[in-house]
Image 1 (cartoon, helix red, strand yellow):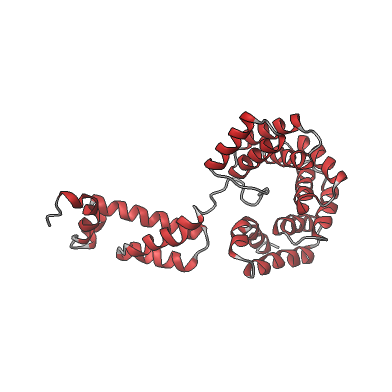
Image 2 (cartoon, rainbow, N blue to C red):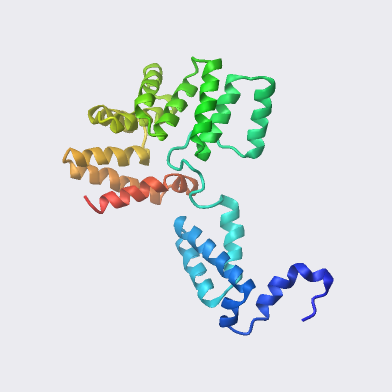
Length: 273
């Protein structure tokens, strides 16, 4: 088939359509690229728990359907990004960012050098899992406003995610003393995790109870259940874990994606209790 100079961009597509057998498709250089693309989309669907998409993508590899992975790419992957893409899934802070927002904040910091801009930039870095950069920006914010509870709390969480619970705990305790419900319970959850990491599980147990008195976070229920198991209260642990799994079935899609790490942990624990 003579495509002509103006149709060069369509050559890969026509090359695939001209292949006379599946053997040719899987051995042709262009065919191999499509297979790699199909496998990429299949792995993403499996990680995202998109069961039906995973089935159809698996079939698309076997029978070399081109349209299915393309549909998945545009309808799911391009809309939501890669499965598990954020570095701190399960530990989100308010705020998320892209390059444009980072550039905007860097410009504001250069010209105005305000504590809030340093905090916003730090939260973006935290969301991306760039914890060293986040810590530096949190500390820069505190240098300009040492009294801001959000900055103190988020720095504490950042240190905790860097496996430095001893440094995180006093910061988190400082915030909880001033505002027990800070960040809708997220600061108290971080404190409970710091206490657990430091071996103070009695204090952590009480902190989880305080969180769950006001919120139903999967993150809290799963870690509370783990402490219940350690205390020998397996029926109580099963109730908490079963609630996590049941709540997930009725949660909106964005929440299911955000709490997937905790739901999977609940399923794993429930299978062993």
